[in-house]
Amino acid sequence: MPQPTLPNESLIEYPSDFPIKIMGAMQDAFAQTMVEVVTLHDPTFHAGKMEMRPSSKGNYLALTVTVRATSREQLDNLYRALSSHPMVKVVL
Image (cartoon, rainbow, N blue to C red; front, side, top):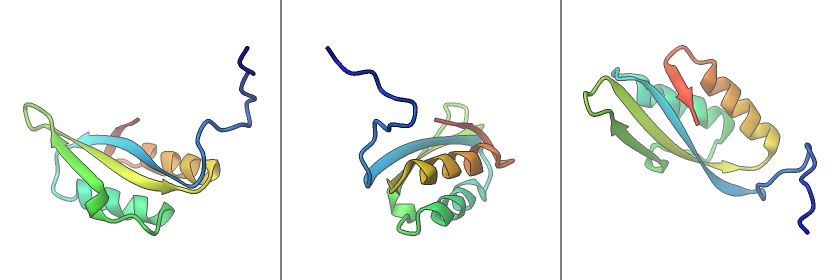
């Protein structure tokens, strides 16, 4: 029988590459601004590790950034920084 996961245990092994999806309104500075925010939390990140997909009507832009996750704390801080950013609508 599988052991239950304790609240402070992580299902992620560190370090590992971890994809994060960021969605926001289509605007010129969105992608570059998100690169800057992500780089603060993962200095190895660069724009080549980002995929961009516009919405069908072109009103929104979805970015998938692949960060080098080194700890739960790092990911939590990155999620907080992204989700509180005024340009960001959703972080998954």
